[in-house]
Structure formats: C-alpha cells, structure tokens
Image: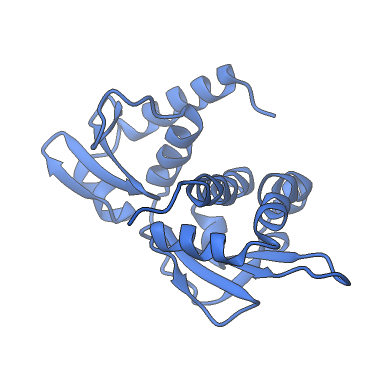
Length: 209
C-alpha cells in the first residue's frame, strides 16, 4: 500500500514532467479543455476540477475549499502525462490481459472487484442508481453492466452478476485494449478502485424527491 509520502513524490515527479509540456499540448492529447491561458478543466466522475498551469494545483469547481485526495491528483496527472495517446482499440480486455498487470492482479481484485461484488451483489438497484449519477451508460452484459468514460480517452466497463442462494455474486471490470499505453498497471487498478468506491458512496446518498 502506497504511503502519503509516495503520493507526494509521485505528484512532484509528474508535475516536473508536465511543466515541460505546453498547456495546449496537454489539452490536445488528454481531451480536456482549457478554461484560461493557465488553467485546464477536468471533469472527474461526479466532480469537476480546475487545475492550474504550470503549478498543477487542484481546486474543486463547486467547492474550492474541498481537499482533493492526493491519490486522485496523481492518477489524473499520470493520465495527463500520456504522450501520443493511442486511438481506442475498440476491443475490451480484462485486467489480466494488460501487459505487466499480473503483478498487481491481487491488489486489483481486492481494491475493485471484491468491493463491487460485496456491496452490489445483492443490490442491483443501488448500482443502477449510483451509475446513473456518474453518467454510466447501460450495456447488455451480466445482470447489470455499465460503461463509464472516466477520462476522455479511457473508458471502462463494470459488469455484475447478482448472487442468490446457490451462487455468490460475480463481477468483472473491462478496459479498452489501449489502456496499457496510457497508464501503468498500478494506476489502472487504482482507476477502477476509485470508480467503484465513488459508486459505493453515491449508493448510500438518500434519494431526493
């Protein structure tokens, strides 16, 4: 498990790399739009961050006083670092199929797949409601499946099979085959985990209206 100091170091290294790239190029290759000559706007799950350039300070658009988790900052910065991002392959792959991912597979299951099954395996309605709040598009897969575009050039799919008296719930998380050219296997595991935990948090928000 990474420590806070590890995230701080990773953030500093990413910023050092990104400061050598123009804001226009970062915007073009990431798919995010600039709002001013020194700021980029980053929709991320159900939040929107304003990120300064070249300092790469993060601020929540709706609540500037909100503290942005370092883990999220590092993940976003690493996505911004992807040079010459490839076009989407249009082919879905499991985490195991990503080059170099086998080392992190157990962490991926623990952080993302297991929580998805445990929380939503008997609560498909909760998953559907939370997915709708994050702009997830329903897909024909499993008992419930959704496609999310977490970043403009990085979609993923969550698929869930409901459990019953005979069978435990099952889940799968799929990625476009190009994902390994944009993020490291460790970052990809965190990407899935952060999405799942945001869904879990949203499923607990009381319904309104």
